[in-house]
Amino acid sequence: MTEIQDERLLGMGLLLQIGRRARQAADPREVGFIAVNETKQVLSYRQGALWLQGKGVYAVSGLPESDPSAPYVQWLARVFPNWRKEQKSRATGPSELPAALGERWGDWLPAHAAVAPLRGKDGSLLGLLLFARDEEWLEGELTLLDELASIYAHALWALAGGKRRGALSSGVFRGAFKLIPVALAVAALFYPVRLSVLAPAEVTPKDPFVVRSPLDGVIDRFFLHPNQPVHQGDLLFEYDSSALRAKMGVATKAYEVASEEYRQSVQMALSDDKTRGEMEPRRGKMQEKEAELSYSRQMFHRLQVRAPRSGVAVFADQSDWVGKNVSVGERVLVIADPARAEMLIHLPVADAMDLKLGSRVKLYLGTDPQHPVEGTLSYASFKPELNPAGYAAYRLKADFAQGATPPRLGLTGTVRIYGEEVTLGRLIFRRPITALRQRLGW
Image (cartoon, rainbow, N blue to C red; front, side, top):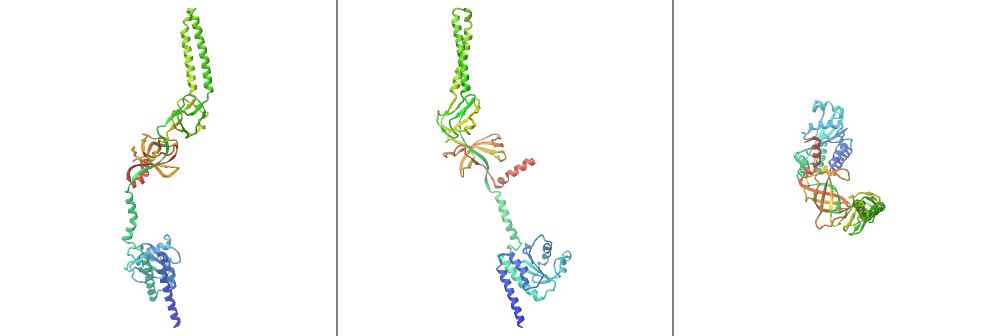
């Protein structure tokens, strides 16, 4: 008698322990593991499986997690729905299943099984428990299985928040809840935003004075450095004078010879009427050589190039020009006013949009990207052209905001150009749609 009481007390203690573990479970996955594995402490079975409404085969005994692609789990997923109307635990077998499923019973389960429904407080079906073994199930074991099913159902109901249409149900509310993010995403596509594009930009002088080569020659020396301030009359650079000095010497000798010939013809004309006719040609030749000498002297005075106005000298590097042979009119450097600057923008053809003069732009300098500089679009080229980077782009210019101090000349960065107001969907899919149209031709 004492042994029977001890067995009953042991069984009751195990049941209470399982119930406490189920109540303390952190999530449904832990409840499922306890149900199919630890139930073996109070009931004898060889295989167990848990099926949850809306989630399918949720747990299988002997495995930490069920694999939906496994043939055994796929077969169970087709078998469980046949017992959804059960109200209490009972014994079952292959004879209660459709022929196609019942024929496979022996491949996956022992001959005798018991199924227990897990129902919430409102009577809704949360899931089904299946235990299988070689021996038949007794009435007392099915009663105990009912109690265990109630414990597991209570734990699952509590973890689901006690809602009829919670995470474990597949009702209309759960489906509608899943559609909320989709609806919000679709609604966001119609949110109005300002169309904008990014393009590389550089701070360049506005209306600068271009210093060009006044003669053909070789630059011998530069007297300033890039971005150096200069004042009107300061010496900028000078040419090599050797070639011009030689030309001026030849012109001087030629003028002297022509002048002497003309002087002799004048003296001879006083006594010889025949020589009098040669005076005018020799006079013309002398004037021609005089003009050549005068031109050579003027060019000699141009060997030193001075600043026509004050500002900042903008050019790449001295070594690019020293020793270089330049032609008349060739651009050498630019003198700019630091207080008058603008943005030079190269907008790639792929990012082109409808631009209007006066549109807002914002320049993010590479040296200070956290403090953008505002401006307005003042010029847009009619057609694209190859920029120094080698790709086709529209040439744009933008003025800095009135009253703002322009950044240092030569700084580069990225400019954001703002266009018309469009929907967020158009902004996101603008480039993919453009590429698709170019490919399909519509």
